[in-house]
Length: 271
Image (cartoon, rainbow, N blue to C red; front, side, top):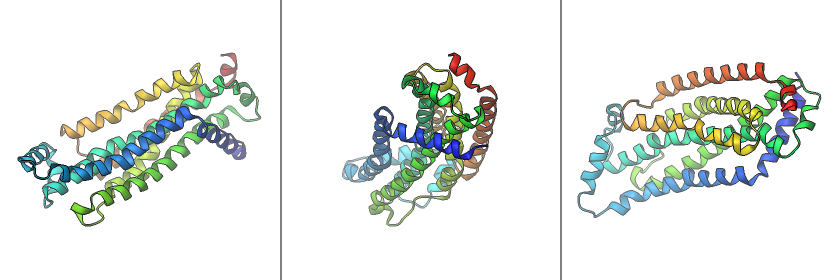
C-alpha cells in the first residue's frame, strides 16, 4: 500500500476544505457557541437567578427530575454546584459528540461530491493509486481533522468550564474520567463512523449540498441520546462510554469494509 500517496491526497483534501467557507464558517460558529458561550452562559445562571424568590425550589425541582444514578453522583454538592455539573458535564456530553461527527461528515461529504463540483475528480481518479488507497485517503482527511478539532475543542471547553464555574466549585472539577474515555475512545469511533458513511454517500452524490444533507441526519442518534439521558432511560458513565464506543467501532468497521469492497473508480468515471 502506497502510504505516501494516501497522505498526499489526504493533505490536499485538508488544504482544500480549510479554504471552503461553507464548511469552515459553520464549524467556527458552533465551536464558539458550545466551547465558550455555553460554559460562561451557564456560569452566569446562579448570579442572574440570585435574589429571585423560589429560585432554589425551582432548581431543586429541576434536579429532582434527573435520573437516580445522576442524583447519587451529585450528592454532597450544593444546588448551584449540582446545576453546573448537570449542565456542563452530563447535558453537554451528547452535544459535544455532535462536533466530531459533524466535522467528519462535512469533510467526507466534500471528498468526492466536492471534487465533482470543482471538476477535479477525473484527474484524481487517474492518479496511480489503487481503489482501496483512494478510499482510505478520502476517509483519512476527515477522520484526522475531526479528531484534531475535537481535542482542541475539548481543551478550550475544559478551560472555560473550570473558569466559569470557579466561583461556585472553588476547584478544577473538569474533566472527569467519563469525559476522558469519551475523548479517547468514543470520539475516534464516531469520526470513523461519520467518514465511512459519508464517503460512500459522497461518492454517489452529484454535489456537496446533496451529500451534506445526509450529514445532518447522522447527528440524529446523538440528539436522541441526549433526550434519553434527560428522560432517565440511560445514564452516561464510564461503562456506558466504553460500550458505546465498542458498538460504534464495530459499525464503523463494517461500513469501512463494505464501502471499500463496493468502491470502484470506474463507476465514478461512468457517473
